[in-house]
Length: 111
Image 1 (spheres, rainbow, N blue to C red):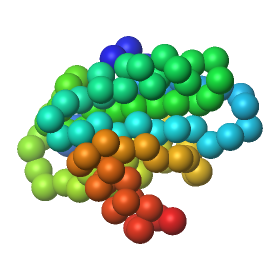
Image 2 (cartoon, rainbow, N blue to C red):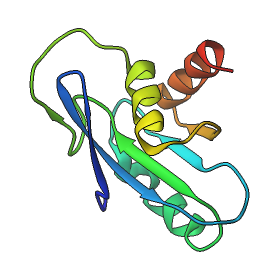
Image 3 (cartoon, one colour):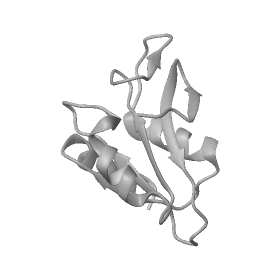
Image 4 (cartoon, rainbow, N blue to C red):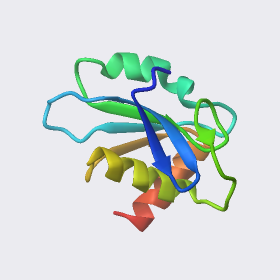
């Protein structure tokens, strides 16, 4: 995963790769499964390149995200903070396994 941002969120530095593209559509946000990290989406990120804005992040406890102070957290709150930090108000979520659950929970909390 090519980190383009480290976003500080309540005791963590989220590793994010964001590839913007001015196509007028909301960015795709790829959410990885609980047995992997953002590298799960290497192929999807490559397929989106030059066609669509796309991003992925490593959640707390995964990949290149750094935990600076262990404390209770919610993955959907981390996702919301990451989107806010990037100024993204509308996105399309794509999740695999646990990432799918996070996408559903996020959509219910912030339709």
